[in-house]
Length: 421
Image 1: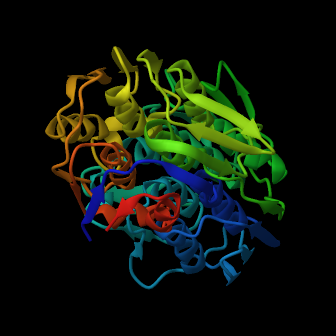
Image 2: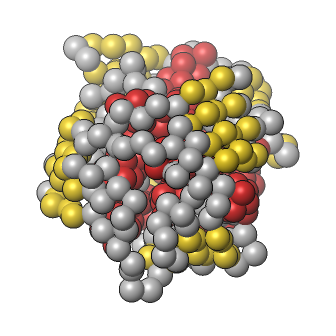
C-alpha cells in the first residue's frame, strides 16, 4: 500500500516503541534450543518475529501465545522434520540464526522466503557450517537453502561482513557434539554479538571470547536453561520518533527506553546530540523538540540500521554530514546506501554516495515527490520522517512494509499529528 505524507506544523505526544527485534528473535531461538518452558514477555509482534516463531514451531517447539506473552517449550536439538520448506518471509535475522540451529539436527531442513530474502547472502555462514560438520545446499549462496547435521564442532573461519553469521554460530555450537573454535579477521556491528553473548549467559551457556570478539571458544554438549524475560524496547525503531521530533516536533516523548541495554542503536541518540539536537529526559521519557541541527562525521559500523534516519537528519542539518564505515548497509533488505541516496536526491537533497557510506550537503529544502521504499521497512520509515516538513505531499511506494518491525508506525505517528494517508 502506498502512503501519502503531507507536511505538518508541530508533532506532540508520547510514543512507546515496540520490543526489540534483535532480542525477540534471539529469545525465540534460545527457547527452541532449550528443553524447558521459557516465557517471553512484551515480544515484538511483527512479520519478522512471527517468521521466527513459526519456524521454531515447525522444528518442534510447543508454543502458546498472546500478543503480550509467548510461552515456548523447546526441544533441544531433537527437531521434528518439517513438511517442505520453512517460509521465513522477509526475516534475514531469522534465516541466519535458525539455519545454524537447524544444522544441529540429523535430518535435512529447507528454508526459503520472499523475493527480498532471496537476495540476502548466506555463503559465508554456510561455508563455516560445512567446516563444522554440516551438509549445506543453496542457490549459489542464497535461499532457498537446506542444511543437515549433526554439527560436530571443530575450528572454523567466520566471515565478519555481517555479525549475524557469528551470532548464528554462537547460538548453535554449544549444542554441537564437540568443542568449537571460531576465528575472524574483522567484525562489523559487534554490538549485536554482545546482545547474543548476553542471551547465552542468561541461558547458562559458556562461551570464551577474546581479541575484541575475533576469537571464540565454545564447549560442546551444553544445554540451554529456560528463561523468563521481558523484551526491551527497540532502539532501532526509536530512531524514527527521535528523528520526527528533531525535524517537526513541538514535544515528542519516547517512553520505556532502557539505556543500560546492550543494543548498539542507542548510539543514535548520541549522534543526534552531536548534531545539536534538543533532547532531554523527564520522568523516564526521552523528550525531543525541533532543533537547528548541524552536520558532523559519524562512524556507523556498529549501527547500520541507523543509516536511513541519519541520512534524513543530514538533509535537515546545516553543513556537511558524513556517514562512514558502514559497507554492510548495502546488504540489508535492500542496498540502503544506494536507496537513500537515490530517493533523497529525488526530494532535492545533495548527496555523494561512497562505497561505505554517504556525504550529505545539508540545508537544502526538500520537496514532496514519489519515492520508493524498496520494500524495506527502515527506508519507508525514514522517508516518512523526511516528508514531514518537505514542501508538498510525498508518495511513498509500499509504505506499509514497515509492518515488518513496527506494525503500528502509521497509527502511532498519526496520534502525534503526522499526516499519513
